[in-house]
Structure formats: C-alpha cells, structure tokens
Image (cartoon, rainbow, N blue to C red; front, side):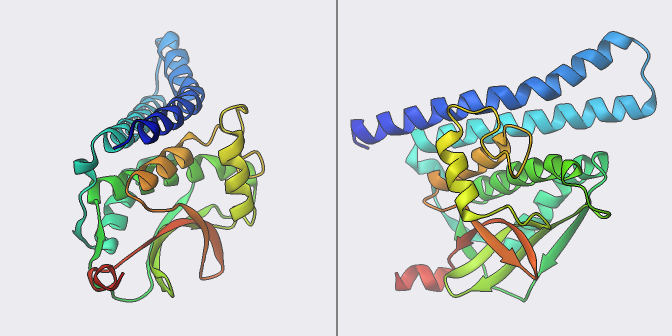
Length: 237
C-alpha cells in the first residue's frame, strides 16, 4: 500500500473517530445518569444493558474498519449466504429495536446462491447501519415504526440493506452527509437528529471491502444498502 493511500485512509479514520465520539456521548451519558439514581427498575436495567451493548458493537465495528484499512489480508472474501448474514444481524439488533418500539422484519425476495464477501465485515456494517436507522425512527413520527433487513436482486448484483419509510434516505443526502461529517454534529440532519455514526461506520467498513454504501429501494420502502457479487459474477468481472 502506498504512503499516500495510507495517509488518506488515516485522515478518513480520524474523521470517523470524531463522528463516533459524538455518538458515544449519548449512550454513555444515559448509563451514567441511571447509575447515579441507585434505584433501578427492571426496565431501567434492560435499557442500560441494551444501550451499553449497542455502544460496544459500534466501537467493535469502528475498530474492525480500522483493522481492515491497515491490513488488507483481513478483508479476504469468501462465499457467504446473504440471508444468513441478515438473520444474524437482525438477532443483534432485536433488543435495540424493542427498546425503541421498532418492528424489525426479515425480507428475503427470492433464493440466491452465495455472494463473495467478508462475513464479519458485512455483518458489522449491517448492524451499525441498522442501529443508526432504529435510533432515528421515533423522531420521524408515523403510526408504525417498521424496519426491514432485506435482500433482492438488481441488475448490478445482490443487494443487502435496511429499509423503512423515510423518503429522505437519498443518494444526495448520503453524499452531503459524507462531506459534513467532519464539521457537523448532525451531518444527516434530514435523516436523523443523531451524529449518524453507525451509518458512517458502515460506510467505512464497506469501503474497506471495496463495496459501496448507497441509497436503495425495496418493495416500496426506502433505505441504504450495498451491492454484492455472486461467485459467478466475480469470475466474469
């Protein structure tokens, strides 16, 4: 890896760290305030546990992205079942979704063979992305808070992503957020009132695997996802 490329990745990592730090202030502040009360109900204990687990997964995803950028061998691809990755990501996100009153669904539109991906990196990206989208949903209003972990076939490959009813999850909003993440505490203000650290952790993880995070549609819902190639498609490229 050239020095110039490594320097660029170091700068991107520093930018993401600033964004992540803003996000981590909120959950750890919640933990601290509840601990100060010394009187915790079962619900309080559950909130503390879910909040801490979500913060730790965010840190783990960020650390994995850093390791992938520093060591190319970590990003080795293997045949992976998209439906299996989505299911496991959903399991990790279920407690957070319950805490925010979000209905988490799994939608597999068709049967597909394995795709080529780094399983750990792909799952971490989907979990980080899902956490940010879940946290943003209550502020969006609406009678039903629903989020789908979904996959479908496109002309470019197999798409895996997360989808809801927020029409503002657009390509332009994502591009603007990437530019503002260094200078704004709310770079995706039209999408979420948080720092959207999970979205940018997912963006960094996918980038380390030479994949793109992009806006996407699934069965009339709006979201963010990535396009994955099957083993056969990789051979044709």
